[in-house]
Length: 414
Image 1 (cartoon, helix red, strand yellow):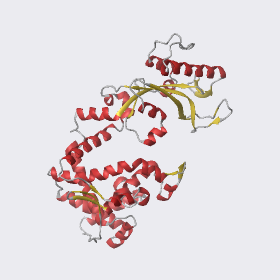
Image 2 (image 1 turned 120 degrees about the horizontal axis):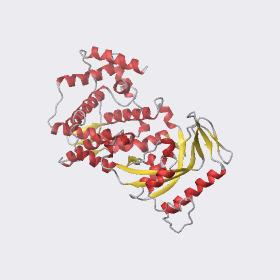
Image 3 (image 1 turned 60 degrees about the vertical axis):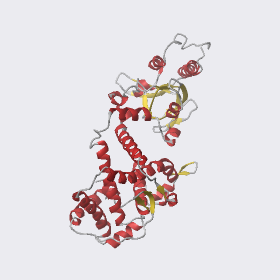
Image 4 (image 1 turned 135 degrees about the vertical axis):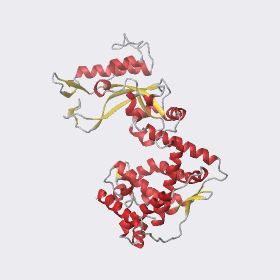
């Protein structure tokens, strides 16, 4: 269905290149204003609906507006989650679109006749498809989403201008970004930590044919693992050199890294990285709430060690019996031991290290946004006026606008 929409729109696009549409203009309040530049109410609603649709697709492509009132836990709905997690990012995107209009003119940029024609043709193709070549019919459908044909034209033009500003500042492939900007972004936005995981519940047995089986620890194995946890807490957390160590009595001078080599269970089963893990140093609240290891690293000073409960999704092929007689099934989320988390100093240019590739998959998109937003903020400082925001903006939460089901598929899923 989605691909059919895209194919049909492409065909219509060829037709409407030579067929002008006449649109109507209704009263449209200004929600954001920066000197001569503005984001209107309809533009804001359109942007909100499009942003909401993209978030829903990222969470679950099959989500609908009706699904968002579902309560996940503690009375929190999916709507609540989206609002708490994504509102700040959305408002930033609206402001950046607004600032880009001013910067576009300051930089002396312009749209070519071909670019203007493409903008009109794209908006006309959307209107022709959903309105069956009837502008009034399209505007009636679009009105249910809070915007109209003129909104498509104005938003598309603003977004086109923003893309040209970004290209001017960053280059077509981010080639204008300097090494200093890369390093500044890295140092401001990443943290590094290492974990020693002690599994007190199960072990992986691999037979002579290379087949692996998940087995519960027997009583002696479990007791030894729990003693190891106790001794590591005394050594690493309490720094108690007077404790009566048994397992670690000959290893009290070992470094954290040496203890990791010897005792970390996950490194032998999951291929964890010897040089540590890298994560954003500005995690969202939901990331901190869902990842206690990241949370521990986030609140630690460099060199500090904390211990937290080890959680994971069980990926075994067969159910695992616990000592309490309970069953852990494949896909279950459960506690299986203790994690010792040490905050480490950042390695120099770790983002260029092939071994760290997994941790920096979103580095370049984040970097380009960082450099772009820095430029916009500098531009804002140079302006003789400031941003004005209508109090009406607060009336439009994500739950109050419909997810965009009109041009989303054409723009993002061609």
